[in-house]
Image: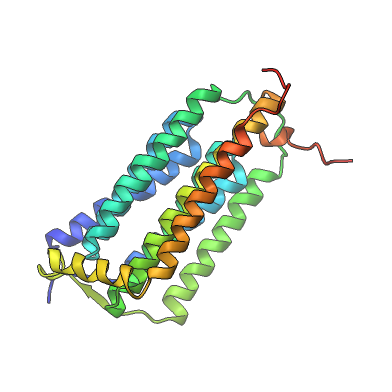
Length: 174
Length: 103
């Protein structure tokens, strides 16, 4: 047992547990906080995989911006808890069975078909330097310049769309 | 090198998180939690992207993850706006009540 292995196992356990917490928590705010924890563990996975830029983008975009937006809407709507209603009797067992089938299929592909035995080395210390970030930035602004610009247009469209959607109609009250 | 973690372990975590996200979409009735489960699935896919980028030693996977993040940020903004409109019209966001198109 080396340190990286222990770290990986602990992170995997936290990621799985926080995903379960998201699924079972009755209070939406708790679910959102479980998801933040999950995003943080995934960010550390990215660091282990030698992707520091993606790890920090994960923390700022997902755990920061997106989840703050989620929490804001949860509290704005006061929908921390939904009243218990009629539940289709077969819905839950069927959903669990289908999810189990999905997981089994993924596991089958992973371990039976792909025969993945390759191991990943720890990122060399050179990965976590500014040189790696420079390479990423250069690729983003040269080879992938068009997708990058299209993304900015997409964000603008989303921004305008949200404002138009939530604007009250003329004459509409409350 | 002794300090290695098998590639398939990362992919197994990714598959597990994706399956849990799918389960969340299927069992929960709160659209906000359904939405969060979708984010969980996107994250699982991102983890697989970064894992393969590392395994093949290319940057393309990381750049694609960056684009997935921005698209999901836009998607969350629009989706939450839709949830707010639904709440404004129905005074509830229970997905079981969204059956206006039902005959």
